[in-house]
Amino acid sequence: MDEIILKPIGIIHTPFKEPQGTPIQPTGACDIEGTVEIFPGYADGLQDVEGFSHLFLLFYCHLTGEHSLLVKPFLDDTLRGVFATRSPRRPNPIGLSIVRLMSRERNLLHILDVDMVDGTPLLDIKPYIPDVDIREADRIGWLGKRVGEMSKKRDDGGFSA
Image 1: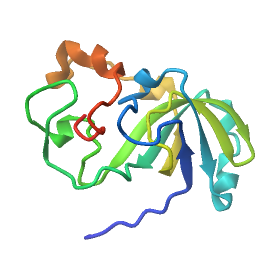
Image 2: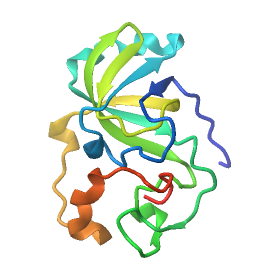
Image 3: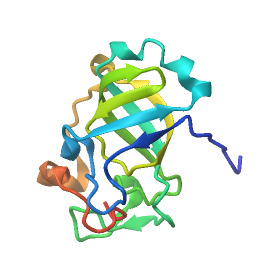
Image 4: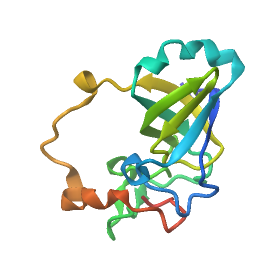
């Protein structure tokens, strides 16, 4: 298999017009409002979504440019393998964020904790279910005690996080 073709199901609207200044993770985007506009052909798939307080959004990082297998993470000065980071400069620049769902109006979702750039193509939505999604981790690799710093905003264009 050489190629997989994905079609956006919607567009994510946020206050961030460019990667610079955009939070790197939803924890750094606490209470920042955004909307998810689901294309009309997919709106029926939103039935019952209001029953969930949080959603996983899978999206295409459309502004990343070329990928790199070695990246300098936002919180580190050492080159790391891209798969040991959350850098958007990946062979397949797919982003994943957990957002809070505040309300739904037909094909529009009002969300909080947005950490993506305005106009980001949405690939999928999945409900966040704490009983099956929370896992205890006994190691977090090179991040160590720096994980608390992930609430900072991008200051480098967002491509070396």
